[in-house]
Image (cartoon, rainbow, N blue to C red):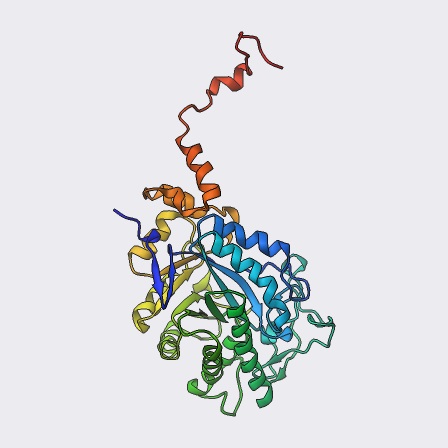
Length: 390
């Protein structure tokens, strides 16, 4: 039985060699928004290890939208050339380069996780030390620990929409072939969708249709600059702690598909500091969201969230629960996870999914019939005359 996990997937004009995706994971290593050698090393190894699609972390369209002072940015053309080094490296190793674009809205301006991920009362702006202002659909703080944002004016909204479009243009010029909009985890697009975070009374708030207006205008603006032949993903919180349900997500996904979104990346939560009981992490805890959205909206989905084992990932694809599986921390633990999965699933030529520079040596290692006698470690190593060496 052939492993479905290793079958190609074509979305628009882009073909992925397998269904294994590096999930976008913030590294908090940027220098005033700029990529550096860390990012080149970090993303290159997952392409070399056999991933079909390699997502670069949430990259901000506006310096005010950075979660931390160490987020990546794409709010100016200066960032394009450094990103090109990363996309070229990913492509040379047989994977497709993807980028997630985001804006944190009222959840911006926090310290990096290993410094507590706490809101920063005062911090110079990421771009050039400017005042770092929090903006959001409404002047409602994320929690009592956070500063109150300023409600976005109509001009702010139009500027934000334009920023997403220009960032999409830059992503294309930087060589990315897949783009994802971050609409989950309580960030700006999610804030506009939520009746808890968005309490506007104008054309961008109130009814579900009005709360959808900002995300749809972002998508339309992005599609002006993102080539028609290239796929567009959207990461969604399929459910959250503030009353958003899977039925809401299915309804939204149907509309998103009509406006040019090809894949829903199905995550959850982000509207509260505490997870709701129904989204407490466990193996594959978000897969059912991907399955329900895929069936209910007739759209491709990507499953994410504690996908650890090869047979687990295979079953997700084989059962039709999702079209792609995205791994995060498990990939950090083992950048060669696709090679390991290919061996465990018994596919032919498992090392062909890795970079040739790795595949040659790993296959040679697997086919080595000589081995090391276990007794060698007890006896020490002996020379040809039988005398112990050392």
